[in-house]
Image (cartoon, rainbow, N blue to C red):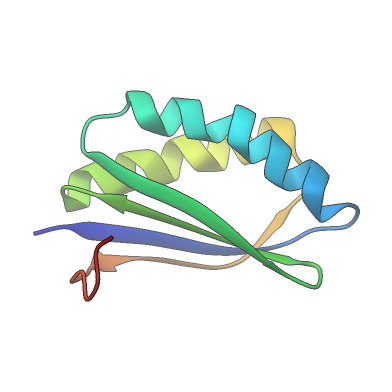
Length: 93
C-alpha cells in the first residue's frame, strides 16, 4: 500500500530560497531512496508544507529521518506537525 509523508514547517525569511534549497538539496536525496514516488511543497505565509509519496511505510519512515537530518543541517525551519500514513491516489496525471 502506498504511503505519504506530510510535514508542516514554520520558517523565517524568503520562501523561494527555502524552495530552491529543497529542490537542489532534499529532492535529489529522496530520488535516490527506495520506494520514492513523488515530492512537492506548498507555501502559505511563513509555513511550508512538504509532501512526498512512497511505496511503503518503511520507505516513508526512512525518508522522514533523512529529511529531519537534512533540514537540521541546511535550513532554518521548525516542524509544526508531521504525518505519515497510507493514501489513495484520487487523480493521477
